Length: 54
Ligand SMILES: [Zn+2]
Image: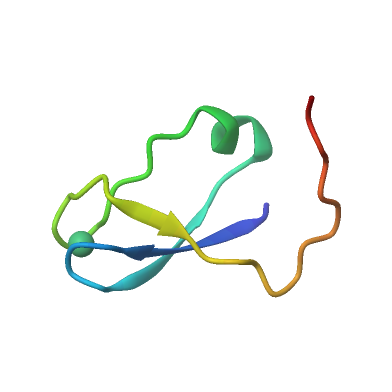
C-alpha cells in the first residue's frame, strides 16, 4: 500500500499516511498531532504513476 507524506500547516509537523488509492481519493486527512485539516501533501519522492484525471 502506498504511503502519502503530508505536512500540517498549523503545527508544521510532517506525517505519512498509508492507505489504498481508493481511500486516498476520498480521504479526509487530518493532522495526527493537532487534528487540523489544514494539511498539505508533500510531493512524493517516489510516485510510480501520476494518473491524470480529466
Ligand atoms: Zn497539526
